[in-house]
Image 1 (tube, rainbow, N blue to C red):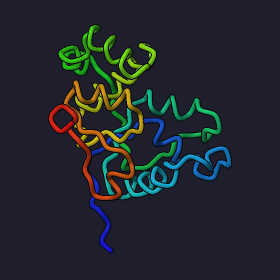
Image 2: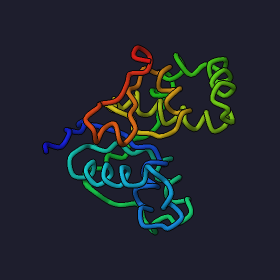
Image 3: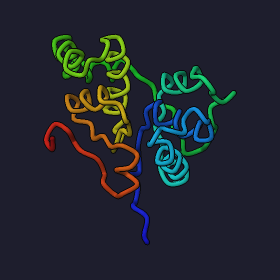
Length: 167
């Protein structure tokens, strides 16, 4: 059976990476996403350019059961949120839109603001797909016209949805 091709440039959110790195943690045994996160992480490091914002690295390293050091792999490209990314993001990350999303997704607005930085960074650095399990990130990606997918989608060969036009 032929494996589905992965995109050339993708960004993984912290939740996906944490599940991938904690695949052996007994506390994660009941999490149905752990295996797909681990498989995708390992394949992405071998087959893709993985765009990695520093705040994702921070979230992974600050999590319970975190590794002592973030994996250093040549296929990880550390990308930053910048002034230019902020200018681009201001077009879709308006206060009213975030208030509505916070209400609709029942997500605290400060968490939504953090998620918006992730989506804005993915958009600015032209990630082909932002991989997430988080509904708030998915909702923001719709505003930013960023393609999102869950790990299982990519492993099945579904390249994700551009939620702005395919929802």
